[in-house]
Image 1 (cartoon, rainbow, N blue to C red):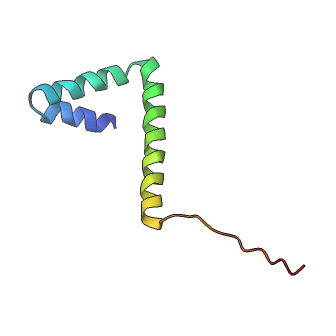
Image 2: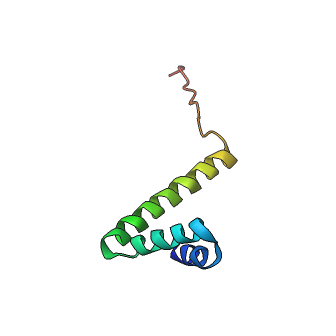
Image 3: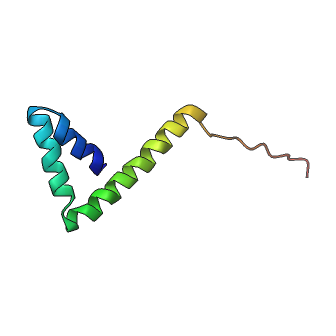
Length: 69
């Protein structure tokens, strides 16, 4: 993620490049780095789960029980 922000800071013109640079600078401070990486990891897991559910469909299963016992 930091590499993308660095590339964005170098390549993007104007406000977008400056914004990438500011976000990277803030995210690289020791206190915010841990929170930033935890949030990025959580969002990654949620995104992967969302797309997996979209591709695989609903996992709702009904269980039929025999009452012949």
